Length: 408
Image (cartoon, rainbow, N blue to C red; front, side, top):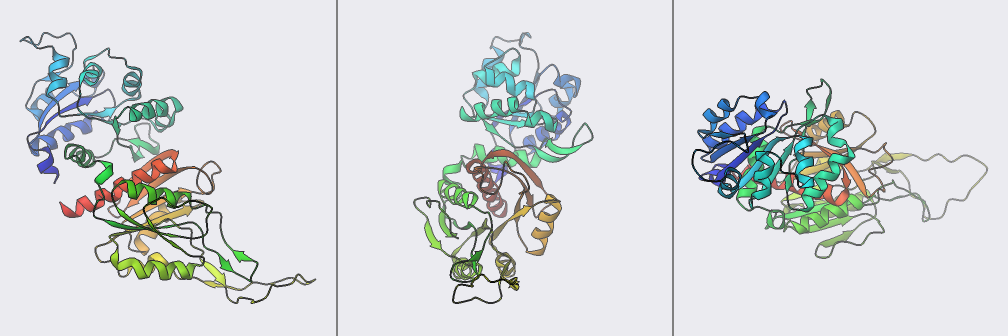
């Protein structure tokens, strides 16, 4: 799929001044191997990390660095490059470059080309974690996204400063996958067309007596956002939901349940008709061993409550998943990634979305979330704090990529 999408396409790669510029050499090489016509524009700072000659050899084309260089023939460089490109990729993109673009500043060849092009622009940030999470950078990113620019989130790993965190430039193959998606027109509105997704949401309630029950703090907001994002992506959606105060997104089939056992039955019954199950519900792990048919009266003595395990829905699905995609959620209070990876392995999942629920500004009951996506192939993608609807759209994109990976 990626090879067909890139073949014969004119792609302009912008390289800015970051240590990750060395990865762009492999990016350019692989794009050319897939049949793309690649031209490279470097900033002055980028030339301090990688020599222009390297990109000239790898791309097979002259490398442009200077806005005022004599082109040798009369075609205004930034206009001709902008017109020729069917897609512009800036990788790595520094905070400085993103800030200029967000402010409409065009003071070098690369920013001038971007201002002049009508082609889609994919920005791949790579920088220190503190810089990436800086509110100024995030505001610039959000502004550009609102104007139609495309972004890839940086990867998690060892940074140039020696710390482990978010800020690494994604691997060339991941960037090429996103380039292929943009070039082939697989945008969000139809990327899951023809798929059936089952999404679970909310808490469960495990009754003690007719009045009391055991539950948790889940509001259902993340699950409902996922159902909405799946609908936006063209999927048929079944929403199996525990008790919430939320209104279900119009267009999905809604199945309302109370107990973990009810949710297990509802999901199992519909599993064979699904292409993907996204288990975002906070399902109770334990239920009272005995249910009192009448209200337990308060006495002078202490009350002991014996609990038994509820069915593990994901574990049971993992045993019979076939070629379906299974996505789990891991609400953790420590060792977030390690616990997510263990859950992925134990339950035969394709993707686990993990978050730290010890935080007060994200997760349960909040409109925002901050997650790390852990994949079966060992990849990790950190998604910085954002509204749950934005997080849900990013998760749907990764689910779509899992389907595309199997097809091509």
